[in-house]
Image (cartoon, rainbow, N blue to C red; front, side):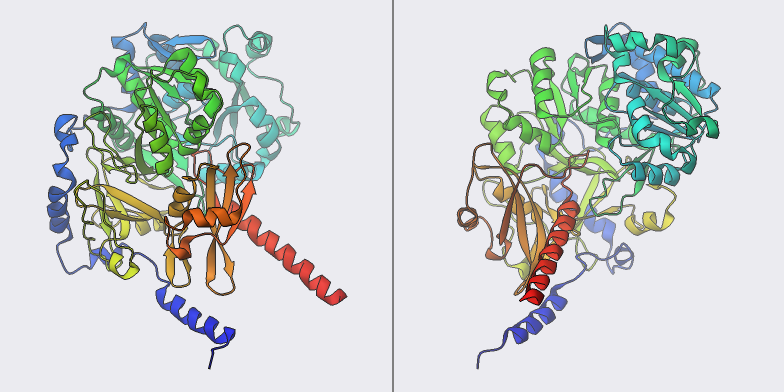
Length: 638
């Protein structure tokens, strides 16, 4: 007798309940493990990634960290190379000595306005000179820089400004007028400093038009409620002109908090991560050691990752510590990078996969000589193998890595001609970083065997994978202090061994290279088997007609959930869904192949380069709800 559809669904539901599990144990599981976790970890790393020749030839896995405060990086470079160009921006060049002077002037102005050690100062600027100046000035005073994203909505600004408790805010005038002026009475802000992108553009007519307003100390506000609330409204340039570059005593301690960044909210619940003076200083020294064979002072960085993103802010600190030249790019795009390459010949370009993808498909790429670029450093999100291979064919090997806001730039593929790269891997731990994959029982997972070429041989059978696959955990001197004002969240992700639990599903091969399957929160079960969207997207992008893709889970009558792919096609290309499914047959297990495809003109991407699946999921739920309502109305009419 053939079972009914209802019977099949009940059986499937039972199987899914058995299968559905938190992939990882909470940190307490490690604390109660009945074996010596630390000894097992030390043994494992000696047998795997510590053997990597990259450490011997380019750097050491363990370097000595000097207790150097963040402002000292700029001070030392300015003393060593005062006339050297620090920043290039829209036709204007700023030397290291001039940059230091402006930092000191602005810090003096902030102190006069009442900023003291421990105060929280919001910084809401793109990659413009004012952002660099304000960043160092805030930290010089021992205050905490709170990074605010200019792309926030009015409601998000209200939430984050209240959450951080910032009484001071430095912001673009247009962002202030459009999104903040009307909500001032609903925030703790007392002082707002506005600036314009045109202020630092050489020969800008708008900059000249602002001179009279600067002399008054403030621009004319558009919002009437500013006057009623008696907010101090000041102009950035006016502060620089009014105050002298006075020597300021360093008030920073090694473990003091200096910055706070908001997570992208890819899980729908943004958090704020606090970093210490020690963390950011240590990371700058660790990453600089990876380039030890080069004179970094001779390099030029194209700075396109925004300063309000931790990756962008840290790249600026690394470049300044080296005395390199920095081309600031305020609006991220593939075209902007290609123009920078054409005009300024940058040698190091940190960027995100979406921008790299834009470059690859930009019509100007074929006419642009990109041979000046020594390193594309790709971070913030998963790098598809297709992108790596495409640039390799052009003679450029991308240095891809892994980090999260809680532990920035922690794993990377070895760079340079002698560094062995594995395109599907995120790489090996950077100096002074400990990394481990922890299984659902709290024990350390076994390394995956490799073949003669070094390819990881991860079993396809989900039952066999259990001994190899778990949660990626990280420990380093540059990890976060805490989640801002949230001890419960902090203790939930840092275990007694000091490891931060990433919630990323991962494995490590026998040569010490780590691989990410996806986030636990993004993974879903189709039938009784796991699906990781990152894996499906990587295979989809290998199709020549697809520029990018984003995969979510949708309801399925038989399997409970199934993959749906949103597709961004290469211009002028069109491919039927059946052809895409056929293309994926030898690249993915059957249950991972999307049952639906939807062509879109853009994908929702966070400022940090992460795909916002929750946005597409919400749109899909809304669309299905509307379709259901329409169907119900039709049935009633019939």
